[in-house]
Length: 118
Image (cartoon, rainbow, N blue to C red; front, side, top):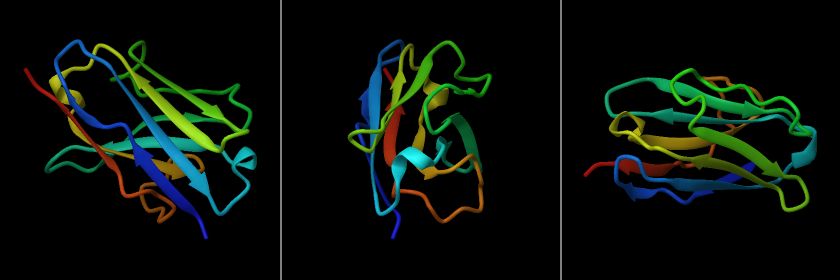
């Protein structure tokens, strides 16, 4: 059974940083691509970034390119999202997801809330 547990969210000021983590279990983590997605209040699920199984392919949404960095530790089964220069529009519930982005996938964690406000 796929289990994904996100952590690291919180309140940040504009221009600040946060690092999200996603602990994975129940599947062979190193064999799967992984994805971060987010959902702002009143909006649909938005793709943020993905990473290939060995980490050599890391596409980003234009809205976060140059500010966010996705990475993974296949030894520890953890997915990361380093978020720098946060802006109020980054406020959302952030999810990690097994595989490439699929808005209909059920292989997703419970999310961690990121709020950017002064």
